[in-house]
Length: 360
Ligand SMILES: C[S@@+](CC[C@H](N)C(=O)[O-])C[C@H]1O[C@@H](n2cnc3c(N)ncnc32)[C@H](O)[C@@H]1O
Image (cartoon, rainbow, N blue to C red; front, top):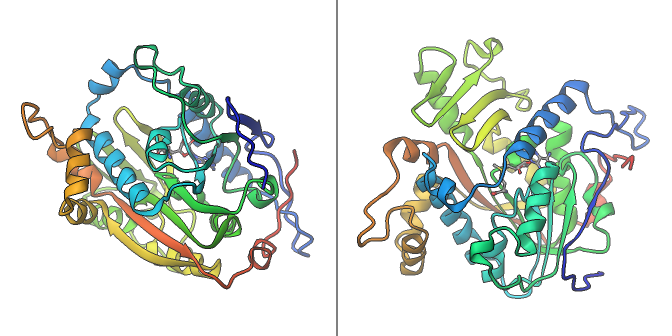
């Protein structure tokens, strides 16, 4: 494992996020990404790349500021529960590095962040280097980092991160559902996680709760659900609101969340996610809808204090501001999960199943 300390994070890219892979049914290890899949992956990348960094004032004025704080609390709780001092962490779809401080607080030893959006990786680098907010220059991060621009759900990351792994913790926050456009991508995502985690390593994440979304869709009159801060729209092809269990991938909807998201996303039926993860030696520790997660961990004093500091529910004193009912409804659309890599599966056993070739 080469993990030399870097003042600046090393960064790289493994070619355009949408580089071509050819599928060869004879199984010689090549894989062709369907054109549509590439277009959608690019749409997602462009959307996140175009999102500029907000000033503190702009952030506080956001119509979903309390939801953002709540989501930060959920991620912090997951990190505090599962990351240990000195851990090597792989952050898939790391975005602008919004979790860097959380990892620093957990005193991790090494960090690799990968995201498909080059603009986000740039912002992440700026944040890591301490240049993000000149008013609030914070001390340097205590862990070395490597930042990479690329598609986490397309190529074999174990090849690219040969010298960086194995990892103790893998995190994929609010992003796993972008892998669910095809079975090949979903498998690639899980095989990457499995191949890079050490036996006993932990995979933590958050993603939309398909049960909630589908239930709301079925209760709605048309193909759209939403409130003042979000809407989700399904295409006509889903007008009967039935989803075949034989094709649990590629169930696309358009998601709009005020001041945050506006791009295609995919339903992830959790039982399929769990079963597929098991194929890759990843066993479910728990899955909880965000509402349940909040109710459960708010029984622990240390996390109540963390919530007070983050301010999602006000600070318990002068600041009485809290999530609006509409923000709380959006929180209900998500779940948190924890998986553990079993001690048996050898990385090479699973990584070879659907071989892909990196073209960079
Ligand atoms: C909602 S943001 C979450 C960012 C970060 N994990 C967080 O919690 O702050 C979703 C992120 O997933 C990234 N993403 C989407 N598809 C991806 C892919 N195929 N490979 C890598 N990153 C991807 C986006 O660029 C975006 O940064």
